[in-house]
Length: 142
Image 1: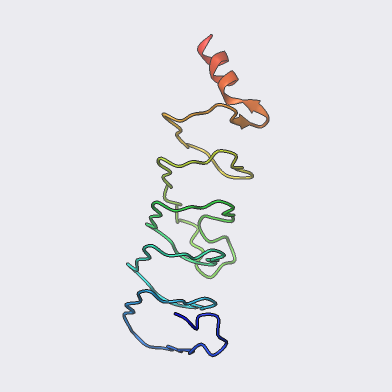
Image 2: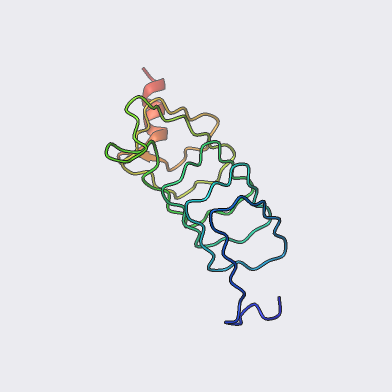
């Protein structure tokens, strides 16, 4: 790995091929994967800052023990009308966030119908500018 900053990095092209890659202690900076099927792939103890995933089926994705500070997650859901994979009968499967530190995060222009929040610290959390703890107190006083 001594020459990791060198411009003489070997470029490997795998095209229209079926392979299983077993990569360990490697620097793959600047790599591109396009039109790739990687079902059941695993990434462990990796640094992939700046990673972009676009137009991807990430069903059953599990992210564990990850630092996501600064992550920008947007336009998530089923393919929209006009997309080649659009299916008007398809339903988005629910997502599950568990034991996550989301303090200071923002949720904007999202469909949160039937979302359940339980056993969470809601201090300072606002919905449309209204403190959730105040809403809960008002509800409990009814």
